[in-house]
Image 1: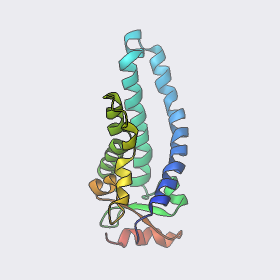
Image 2: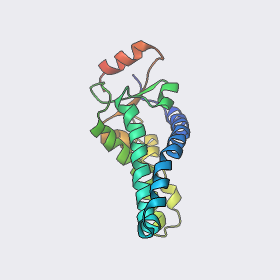
Image 3: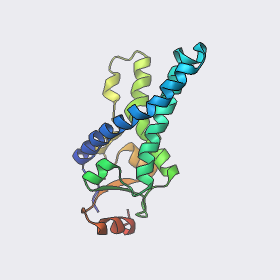
Image 4: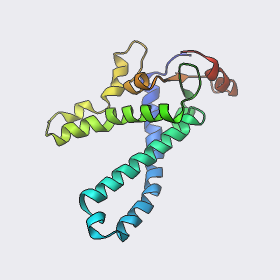
Length: 170
C-alpha cells in the first residue's frame, strides 16, 4: 500500500477539524458550567484558562485516539479511504495514538504558540512544520508518523481493505 498524498491528508484534516469543532462545542458545556459554580479565584484568569485548555486537549485526543485505535480511521480518513497503521499492519494502540497526538500537537500548535509568546514575529511560519516535513521526506512521512512509527496509507473502499491493511508490512 502506498502512503497517502499530502493533498488527501490536508482534505482529511479539514474534514476532521469540522467534526472536531462540533464535538468541542458540545464538550465545552460541562466545563462552562463548572467554571460558573467554582469560586472566583478558580473560575477566572490563569487557572480557568488552564482548566479549559487541558480539558479541550483531552477531548481532542480522545476524539482522534478513539478512531485511530478502533479501526484506524477517523471519519475524514474513511471518506478518503485512508488508514492509520503500524509497521505490523495493525491499528495503533492508545500509547501509539498518544505519541502521535502529542507530536502532532507540538507541530501544529505548541511550537508556534511558544514562539508567539516569546514575541518572535514570524511565529506563524512554524504552524504545521512537522506536517510539511512530508515534502522533504522521501517516504512522505510527517514528524508524527515517524516518531509514533505509524503511517497513513491509501486503501480501496472495500471491506477487503480493512483485512489487507492489517496484513501488509511497512
